[in-house]
Length: 380
Ligand SMILES: NC(=O)c1ccc[n+]([C@@H]2O[C@H](COP(=O)([O-])OP(=O)(O)OC[C@H]3O[C@@H](n4cnc5c(N)ncnc54)[C@H](O)[C@@H]3O)[C@@H](O)[C@H]2O)c1
Image 1 (cartoon, helix red, strand yellow):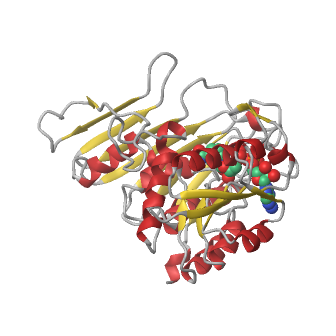
Image 2 (cartoon, protein in one colour; image 1 turned 180 degrees about the horizontal axis):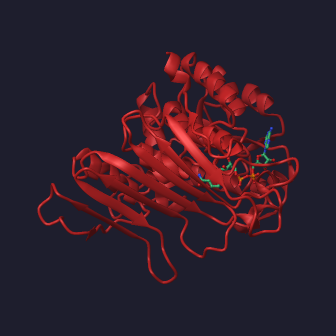
Image 3 (cartoon, protein in one colour; image 1 turned 60 degrees about the vertical axis):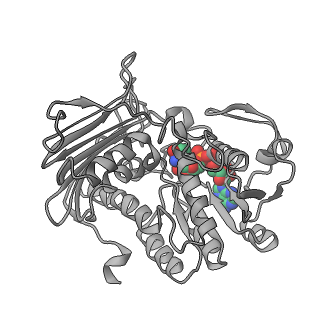
């Protein structure tokens, strides 16, 4: 088996966890180097809200070399793969610097922070021989794979109204990750973090989203006047398919984070998040399947292909959001081994689920006015 040397940039809770999991579970990856602006995240014990107390990374993975300068790391270590885990708005530059050097990229979401970054990255990727894999966690969930299968088999007919909710009170992360804390110098577009919602929905429709109207609540909950508690966006495709997204980062709703519903011409699908003691549930009905004309529960969970030996390399070596991150990483590792030219979830997939949130932010500024969407590939 060919081995790939991996460097990681960004050692916050997410980068640290992903790095350690990938180093432990993905056989073809050798973690060789890490980069962060804060050396303490490598040399000292750390505490994260998600993850708790951890020993110095230097002790956990002693073979790693540490850098504070990303380009110096790339040029010294010459890795085959880079994993990008920097704050959400600044992935594009790190991805581009790697792709320009022919280094494959596994990038966390959202893919880009601005339309200019999207054009830049699209161009850089086209001129590179390296792959960019979009680490869109929610696309690896078991119930999303089930939805994709229902659609592929025609059991839902044509999806024409799809909706997703991402309701996650993130106030406890404001101190640890200042880029999440709204303030006079940081007014995050509340629709920006849309990939968790749109990724699964866009994976079952073959058109891009073309218009959006989005409104945002302002601040009711936290006392932070710059917070936007909840926003609601309605997108539409050229053929009339509607996609609705509700996204909240500040709330007092004690419910599970993610729900999805798909109305198809021949059926219906829903995954509703847990409510207190009621577990999350996935159900569907179809006019095309004998016995499924009534709402029918599907025995699927977050874990992809639960119970099957879905990793031929290390069955059951699973990690990240019920196994979704592992599933995506194993797909990427297979593509690396095969010398593939495109990643399983490529840059286009990442931009399709990221750019709608940027346009939705523009609509919010214009009080819900309908805004037209465009993509870097429109001119290709
Ligand atoms: N897929 C998921 O479900 C999921 C979950 C959580 C976070 N995320 C994503 O993971 C990423 C990281 O999130 P986090 O919560 O760990 O954030 P974080 O702020 O804790 O970590 C980011 C790290 O990047 C470092 N950094 C910033 N600029 C840098 C630079 N120029 N060079 C080197 N290092 C630099 C910071 O010092 C920080 O340690 C974000 O993009 C977020 O959207 C994804």
